[in-house]
Amino acid sequence: MNPTDLDDTLKLAAEAGEALAPLASDVDAGRVESRSTYEILRESGLLGMLAPPQAGGLGLGFGSYWRVLAALGAYNGAAALGFNMHHVVIGALADSYNTPLPPAADRFRSWMLGEVVQGRKLFASATSEAGRGAKLRGMRTRYRLDQDGDTYVLSGEKSFVSLAGVADYYVVAAAADGPEDTADVSHFVVAADDPGVSFGPVHTLSAMYGTSTAPMTLTDVRVPRSRLYLGVEGMSLFKVVREPHWMIAGYTGAYLGIAEALFDQTARYVSDSPERAASPVLQQELGRMSARLMAARALVHEAGEQVERERGSIQANAMVHAAKYVVGETGPALAQDALRVCGSAAVSRSHPLERLVREASFANVMPAKPLECLEYLGKAAAGVNLFDARAFAW
Image (cartoon, rainbow, N blue to C red; front, side, top):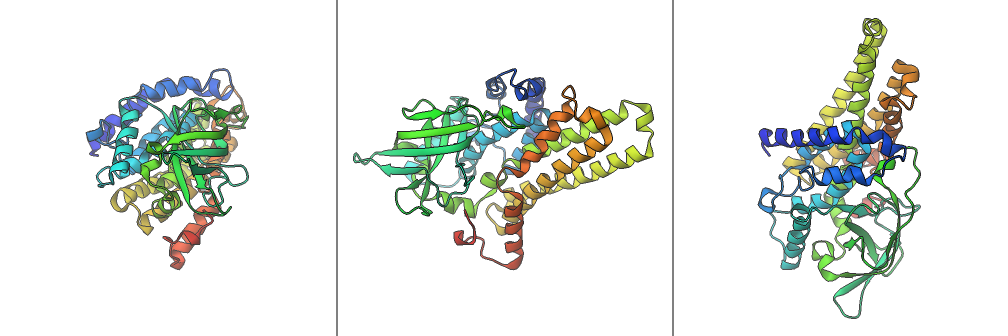
């Protein structure tokens, strides 16, 4: 994507963000349903931003996507995080668009991108399970091929499914019937209205209520073979190990946006008072926050560009783990800085900083978690074969 195209897409994100920003506090407090935020995003022109131009999309690469997500996150972090759940499952298709695929996989790719671009359908990921998080190995949700040979049957429970009751489709990770620790994991596209699909109440979280995250139950859900992701069984773990950027770091842009908003709100608080703005102490505090944010932003941008240049390389994979780790550390650090600088303004429900302080810590809840990021970086430095799935607990 050339810079002009990216600038145009960032303008779309800013327009959507202006509409999303007033909803952030009301959705967070449960006064407004989160569905309204995703209707704005459906109509924003960004739903198919990863789809290639040949398929009617905007053709964003991973690095450009991170920048757009950060722009949205600065306006409404929960909406950006939920929107990322849609793009996480679209990203692999977009990455593969110029790669020749077997007929079944090609048909699946064309169908799914068509649903997004022409149908304006919203997708989400359903991976996490209670006690296991998003790890694929040992997954308890199971699938089997029905006797008709053309239908898969899925049963299981997912614990944290974002866009629950909002998305049109859910890409569900499931393991083949067999040993408990099997690595034979596949993904299936399940429609929200498929018989046997149900959702529990939205989780009451300390932040990110706007992601509409709830448990999902699948009871003998019948999925046609045509909705097996890319038409291939057992490729999910292999894909995550080889090209982990969507699964473990798609969220990073949204949390960078929250960090940007934390700094902007703190700087605005200081500059609103001539006395505060003239204080060398507060100037130094803002300087420290600015330096932290610049470093995180630079790493995120470089990591995203590295994926676009060398997708699947050890260097690119290490960079996205580093970016996820650093953003996860930077957001909470800026939140503490904001509390120190702004005092009661940062804990008042009437000020946006209070919500941002709560949201910043959630970066470390999402995969890959901080210690997993550090483990990957340490193994890369030690020369461990990171293309071997046995090197991880995935």
